[in-house]
Figure (cartoon, helix red, strand yellow):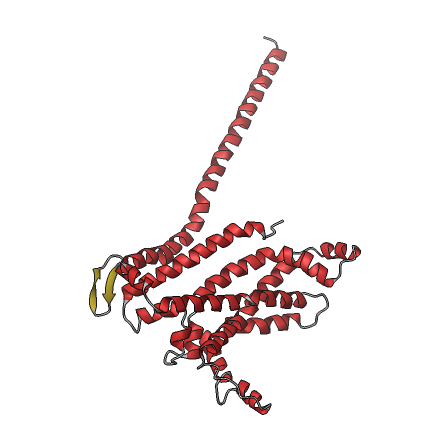
Length: 323
């Protein structure tokens, strides 16, 4: 065999080894990638999944079990079946509590269009002190609800409240804000609206920053005015943020309790007529010491909020713009 043949054979063997190594390397890399893609993501989200399971699903299952029992602090639980749900369906306070909760929620939802206007104003170019204004709007959201409620309770006090003092200065006799049924209900809802505006302004402001300035420039070239741009560009492109705020506001409205308790007070006779579903739950669970019946109320709230949330996610495809 000549030296040329030997060199050709060696070159061919080397090329085969390189080819085999090239085929094996990607296969080995792919195997490492599949292991990483398959295991590590689950390891990272495992603590969150376990936490949600322990803090949400386990109490939910326990609450359902408790709703089938009659149980108080000083008496052991015993099975009563669906009696608590039958009792809830016949409770004369349930329709009033549900209606009040809907009214609270609707009024709190009015904070969304108000927040859209404020957010648009704060995002205008050249506005001085915009950060200060955002902080001032956001302060009520991070403050303690009980402290805020006490301040509003003093503001709307029938005799010494600043609102009625100003009205009397102009010769107008103000109403008894926190001791009149429908007036007290609206006062609580307005306080909730006022507290939530700051958070909504921050969310909507972040949404406004994602809108390209070129869109507004093109609209101006086409002759669109400020309001036309607002309704044709700003609102449609803000619908994802508006949808998020709508869902969270409805959930928050159906969880309203602390403002009623702090602004009106549990001893106030009008509280019985302005109570929410969560307040009905509180009265059954603590003053009434009927844990089984309270669990039935909690499950009812869960079902209502769950249905409303599912409906919103189904309907949002028709009006939310994700493009």
